[in-house]
Length: 193
Image (cartoon, rainbow, N blue to C red; front, side, top):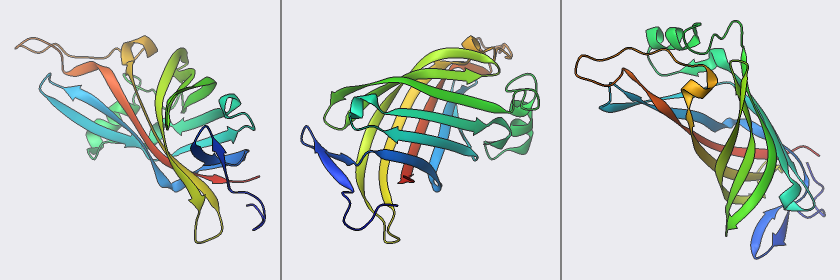
């Protein structure tokens, strides 16, 4: 937490951004979600309830970085049997690979409050480059004196590239679970130092 005289925000190219420092994802104000196609006709939504992230906001915002860890066993789709299957060796194999990891490798400004965060995503021991489309939502100080900022991020991955290849062919054509998975993240980050 900063002192009351220390700057909470700064101007960067007309955008008000957080002061440099280390920020942690607020567990009470986050959603790490995903969307998958089901039977080629609908979408199933889910999320990982247990996820942490450290965001280092650099003096030069384009040198900022993110590391994140998601607990595979915390997957939740509101259906216990499906969740158990997703934790099984046919999908995430949560006992052998308990975490999904993301580490940023660079950030680029797109326009206004939109950025592209490049990084490496590791699922089930397989690491692939993944770019997140990030929208900076704003910055401020909470009623509890915490310096915070909000963001949302999204991307689409091919689950088969990470070894998540289980599927069932449908009699009507197509497959039970789509290959493309949309990732949707919403969060607040709280300044630590």
